[in-house]
Length: 423
Image 1 (tube, rainbow, N blue to C red):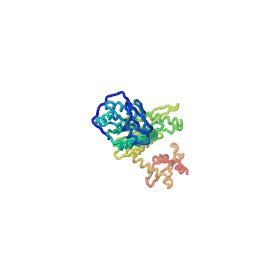
Image 2 (cartoon, rainbow, N blue to C red; image 1 turned 135 degrees about the horizontal axis):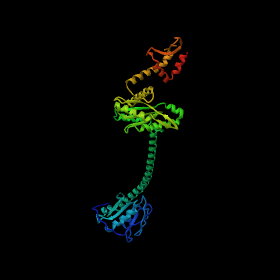
Image 3 (cartoon, rainbow, N blue to C red; image 1 turned 90 degrees about the vertical axis):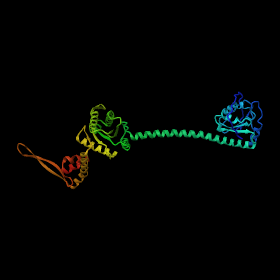
Image 4 (cartoon, rainbow, N blue to C red; image 1 turned 90 degrees about the horizontal axis):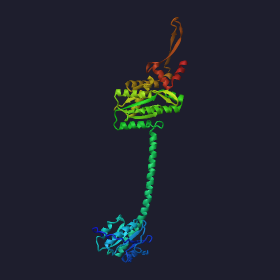
């Protein structure tokens, strides 16, 4: 019943199609002159026996809704007039299913119609001569498709609105997640990466083939004194200013972070021995300046611990060894730097052993007192005695006070050792 051939040509005409609407019933096009629908009406009665078609005269216009069917009765209409009628019909019935009744005398009619419609997927052609029963069945199928399609299009609109709303919610959730992730990996006081961000970036670099990096750990000398004397707000202000100073000299391909408290970290690509010395001196110089903090002049200095990456290093090794170098620098005084080496490694192992053995030594009575007389040089009389504590360790032998006294002070055992001396 449908037919198509080589595209024909339409001659424009001013005659618009006349469309009718009967609720959800099909819509009939009446040709100019108001001629009756004839064969088309018989097919409509077979397809929809309970619907009385409404016929409009020529020139009427109809606005359609999704779910409706428009029937265009072009039977007996000359081909040059069909184009204008079809353009008008598809314009006013843009949401409906369209059924076009055509004469089969001109085999180019179907293909010509397809050239002027924007939505051929919503158009069905019934080409005469056709079987009325089969044509009625086709109309019923089209009507059902229009009904379900209309519901689907309405549902599609709802789904599109829901999808858009969900997309907005997802974008908002992603924005909140980005803010949370940034906060989790950055320091609120300075805006720099925090320890988690620093360790994460260091791990990322190692995983991506960076095999020659240098890690610098930085600690502000006597920062606790500033906090306790001028208050925590002054301490925060000093932290921010040191962060700004360090940022001015951190290489563009490097990483600067505040690791917590008064400790900062810097990662650079591999530097030569002289390059490390020069960069350390630069860091010491930019920080070792008098700064005004909450109305007070504060003389600031830092200590540095440095570790150079080796092929078997992971981020834990780099940070641990840089921290040991930092501790060694701080034991030497203010405004110092140390690069991790074998000496620091051995000293660290020894100090760890002393720390673990010191408390045991107090319980086991491994300490002893010796007394050195104080003599008047002129009269040679003994004026008194200087009490000296010694540690006779079965594991380490005679341990110098220069070695174990600093350990006792750091581990909090100095008071207990003092009580033992007084007893």
